[in-house]
Image (tube, rainbow, N blue to C red; front, side, top):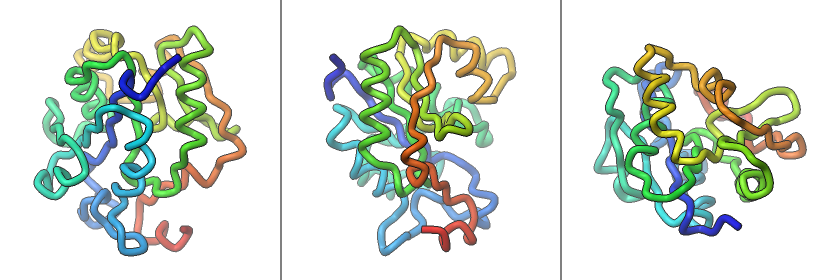
Length: 191
């Protein structure tokens, strides 16, 4: 059984936010709350340690958790944040979530944890019935060196790294709202 103290969470907030005119997505307000706060509120009861992967506005993010910065320069994608998180995590599992999906819920997180408990998998990733959502996953931190090798080869595609490992899709087809992703100002009209 996987307990709270076995899990470190990383909330990915280190993107360039080019479709948001460069505004830091995690700090954009939705219903008077920064987007990151939605994920923080859900995971605080699920994980023993919370990391925020951010590359700017560090002081603002510190009020939500322990801030880590990518080791790779120039906004190289979610794997850069995951790589840093997996290198500082002292737990057997790393829960990965995006900062820009405010409708994330405990059901999805509980299913990721249950999958990891039940299956012989190194990565459990949410699937909405159509496709996987790579930034919603639970991974074993012993994949650290595998991930570093992948990055050293020049690859940056999160989905490709997942598929090259022993992964399990987690059926979340009854939770489509959890994956609503706010990437542009127009997306805010959907929630």
